[in-house]
Image 1 (cartoon, rainbow, N blue to C red):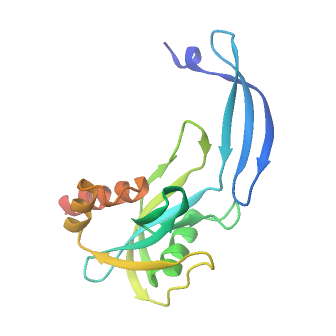
Image 2 (cartoon, helix red, strand yellow):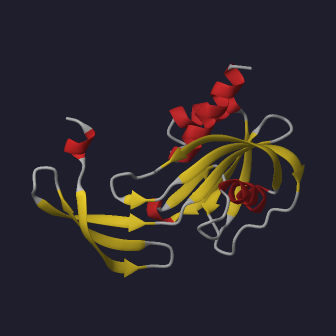
Length: 183
């Protein structure tokens, strides 16, 4: 099938619920075969995520509680853009400093990811950031965060053992491994 044979045509979108961060829609689509379906769609704000690397080459991750998992995760600093036109690199640097205290200098773009393409409209730009200084950790009021500094080998082992399960973190760690392997 070519791309046109796979394309759906949106006929309508109805806002069903608006929460603090998310908007829930019901979309109506015409499928390529002419049938019409209803489709759930969630819109979240776009954001940025960054894997900070400190002066010793250690990866700086944050440990925090995540309500959907009802547990604590180990992941890279990330957050939503403060406004739709905010530059993703500004957001990434801000999140690194707010969540870890690291002031990022050089920032290397890794990828744009769409965490749940089936039903969530959100994109996150993922970066690796190299420490250029150290400030004060200033998490948002609802964030209770511990900072963990680990080696690349420890991070890879934690991914293999299912300790690190966050997709943007896994992407960033493997990208960093690729960069260090190719030096």
